[in-house]
Image (cartoon, rainbow, N blue to C red):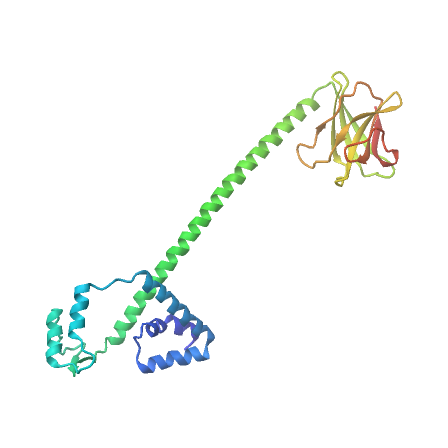
Length: 289
């Protein structure tokens, strides 16, 4: 018999319950000796049944316990009269010989010659196994429900965060679009210098309100020690128009310092926080108006 079939037959549960014949017990022990998998399963069943027995143990009735103890004498042979007394105490009847089973009392011992014995043993083991499976299944279902509830709460939090982000970016987008659509804003594309031909930035400048905004998406990201700085060239002199970072999202449009007059704009790479004067060797983009 395959290991899986052997385990699923219920014979291991019967072994733990001491409900097998000597031959069947020997078969189980031989299987455990040759199969580490079966041996491990037997140990698991023993541990589970021990936990189950301790969890649902019932203390015997004190009167019933005293009655049984008064009828037992382990130092003497059980007599027929004792058997009759015990029978009367529990108001049981010894079944007559029938087609399905026969019980015979010999020397105070009840022997069962029924063919239904094995069926009863397997049925009892199966009921115990089903109960344990039910308990394990309930525990597993409870864990899955708890896990699902946690996942649901996490999804709600993520959805709220997503809604807030969309609302923020949407607001930024419409504010930027409103400014860009203003006819007083002049759009100026800053082209990469010879050392940074692939670089690009776009500046919007409102000469009436002096507002300056920049979209730096055509520039590469800086490291933690550097920042980009925009300069307005006014009357041949550079004027600090503000420091900015590259942001690859809908909020990339940044408002910088007001500029009242300019003939050109340029962007340089400066130490973090910006410089008082531009580093000409680190000029990335520029364009005249």
